[in-house]
Length: 217
Image 1 (cartoon, rainbow, N blue to C red):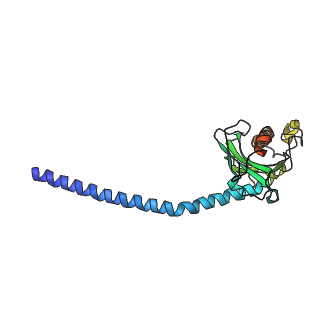
Image 2: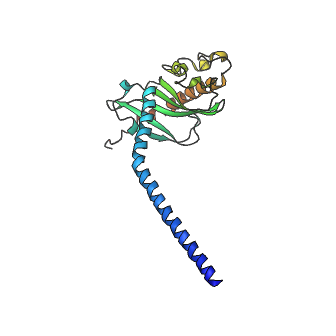
């Protein structure tokens, strides 16, 4: 009986050692793969982000490295954010010429609608793009530029053009078009874009005074 127990223990130990070796080898392979692919993934993510930013802020507005200009903004009700978000600061000839804000429309039909909002130094919207949403396909997803050009109507708008009371969809007496039967989604986006403009107006002085990365104090 004792010899059987010893044999069983030896088998268990041998099996455990084999599993440990395979586990170590697997971990090493995963770490190696991660190290080799992480830079490629990071570059791809950066390229995708820059592509979206380029869609909301015309290249003629800046000559700085826009991705390197990224700043962090604390959660803010005007941006609809519940965690820190990003702000990219555009410069032309060293002077701030505009910003790109991450914003959220929290009252979409199916939840949060994530946005990028480009604003020039004079407070005019240069472009808006939806970066994430869960709106109903074929109904509310027309806010996505890949689905329709609806989002383009924000370009050139400001807090005074149209006046605040007209920052609504046409059904509610505003100037922004919306498809019949799917007004909850565009209402949320219109409200979020105007709030982003309010945020810019409130923080404009601080944003303009933001030092350029690498500049001497």
